[in-house]
Image (cartoon, rainbow, N blue to C red; front, top):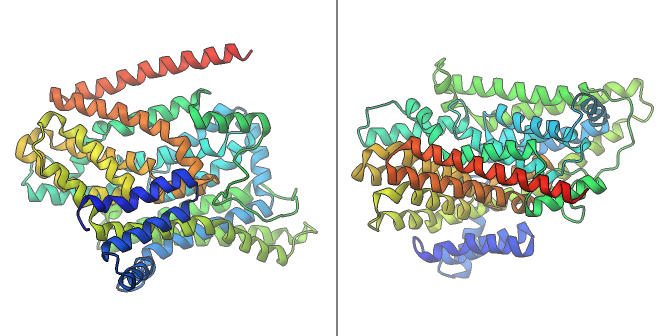
Length: 523
């Protein structure tokens, strides 16, 4: 069943079930079981052994899988930090301060979008840190959690994929180095090529432009409109009938002794310590090379997140304990309750991540990505449509596998091989199209780890996030696909970019006009 059309069945089955049942873990479980059966040709015992292997590798893969374990611990630390920030009254104090400083919904939305662009070193870090900072502010202005998740998800990976000083940038620059060596490309260095590819990533341009348009205006589409209307009219920021990863379920007493520092210090320390740890681990593993790009190529992101989360958690607990002398209700019993509550709030996200990793392992065994890549290499395709086609193919691969990095690893070398044999001048646009498609597919996939992280950071149901973000992602992708088609047919990067910008301007004029008409009709 490997490397055949049947290899598409498990991811598609999981995704379809998620959209129909709205039960993520059940749907992932069905996808995992079907994948194991296909790999082992429906042999029951062998399939069970493979199932065990798929889950075991999340924690043990020829030794302790430190990468995954550190990520899971970081998520748990964030849950505990959130609980103590709430227990200490830091959330209330910060919300009161934010209302005075940021007085409009527009301001809270724009702040979130800008934070998403500023914290660009890693998408996991971005998704969870921005959520912790922005959530009290957007909550105070009745911005729905679905919109918060959209802002987080649509700024994290899109910024990381064009930033050379990020974990993504380091990974991709190293990939480009291998590709350039293979094809004897000497016109530019991998770093120069990565920087030159940024304006060719049409999906990122369209996505970020739409994010800031939505943040500036009150225009919403489809499901997002329902979430925003409910938040504004009732104050209900998310669907309370659905499980929300990262949402606290503990009942803490109202605390008026809290200060803004009770929220700011743990979060700022988490960010600063994580950045310092990323710098130190990269500096050490690179052989003490002070080149910032080399440092980010070697940095240990999960370990850095673990250290930052640990320090942030210790500070959050310490800030609550210091209230013992002035807050008569503060006690060690609440310390334990906050820890348990914080851990429990993150368990749904952790379960989903573990299941997603298991499915990814089995999809790799089925060679789903290889099958999709062969669809391109085995067919004679006109050169003009190759950038657009690779954008679509990579998007589908990332959507089906839930992995943008896995899609990079498979299709970047294949895309380079195809275009170097036909038209080497289109090498960078083709590689940029692969990067763009991977981010788009990752945005749409309910089994993507970044989708899960963004939902967790915002405190909203995973499927609600997927369904509300989907229309914006699809619109950005259609614009990007048109841009790549124009680029391929005209052999001009500038004309492709201008076409994308032109479509965005027309779209914004239409949306703005429609928004004003709706406002007038509701008066």
